[in-house]
Length: 88
Image (spheres, rainbow, N blue to C red):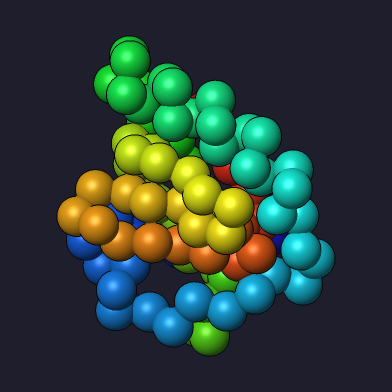
């Protein structure tokens, strides 16, 4: 799968839709680690998610994770059910 890399500030310009496979429970666990990586060590995570224009990727610090959303800088939220890949 080829995803287009975008700036995290551009996330709000896209309509985010659910991924073909909902891996919300899996991503919650992975993103808890990414939150710690970002908050304690300032490490970035690459997140690929589904949009109406195809997959998009961002490289960012994960601020928090809830049962349904991932929050990144600027208060932007990405639904967990739209996430395709996560890389540390």
